Length: 133
Image (tube, rainbow, N blue to C red; front, side, top):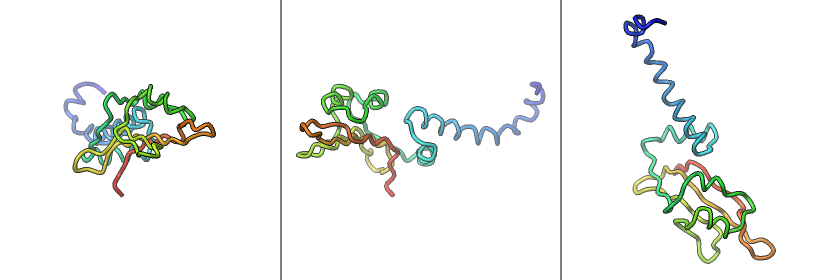
């Protein structure tokens, strides 16, 4: 294609851009948040309705460093204080919560379970796009 053709027929590229922009947003969600394709599409679908509050000092990179079986002290040393903990069980650490007035947010939660020695260990990492339904 030469530049004269593009200048004269620029409007033909509009459908391609309309498809390309959401595809790039889905790719971003997949790479940055580690979501599956369907989860990424859901995050893009509710893009304008999303509001996530994160714990102070939280980063996706640090959250990704947490592995199943890791002890609670190591989790704390990696990503520090959660926003919410369920006391007295202390087996669920929430690092993100929905912002005011929305139910759509990027949920980040660590589920812990005590091993036979009473040491809390990571049983599950929840990293998903939360919807109220």
